[in-house]
Image 1 (cartoon, one colour):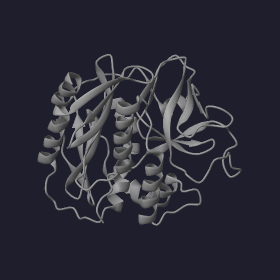
Image 2 (cartoon, rainbow, N blue to C red):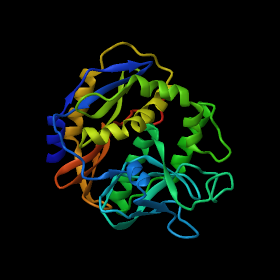
Image 3 (tube, rainbow, N blue to C red):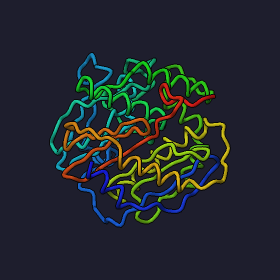
Length: 321
């Protein structure tokens, strides 16, 4: 698709930096675009967004999102929403128009709770968190949503597979919780994750980042503005860092630059299918034997693009032990 080809062609890769077995390569752009939307965190802080269950009884794969303000709000694929009856993650990137209420597709990341428990805020609305879903889970969910769009025209994930993935990750990191909450995994490994955030500061003109674990590319995210990426980078670093903590491989000190360039080339050439977005723009799904990705395009501009390699041993992108 031309907009993806053009966007990838216009970016450059910065100097790679590693911490342990995780490598980050900055994705750079000379564009000085100033975002005409708010991030989710900004909107909630300004009290112009409200997220609730769709009804008193609720629905696991859906939430109600209200934009109460005069500026569009960007919701990022994989961002976690905490509170109400159970914590959820966003199934895709959405740009919510001003003064608009939408029903948004989500996945549950807390299998053992369906109540406004007394140990939590009594508010019936959701708040944002400081994380996105871990990268392997995002890749798996992205592929599931693409298949759902193609076969049923819906934005649904495979909820059972997501719960199974969370359970596997929690057990591997000795972070089981009473409600099978993925957030507890992040909380238990807070200090390790913070090390990655400290090592990978945002650079000049950076609009995205490509990550590798133990010498192999594991995925990337880019957005349309340096200012936007600055606000989202810590969440995205955590997404990849959690996978790095799980991985038992060692950094082989081989540059990732060549493989990164090859992967971006595959993204440029990938088969793309376009669907009407929830909210503004179009949802683009990228597929094939080698990559799995998704993007939100509004007015011929990529707002968010993310892609992951397809693994030879993947069932749900689970690494071999």
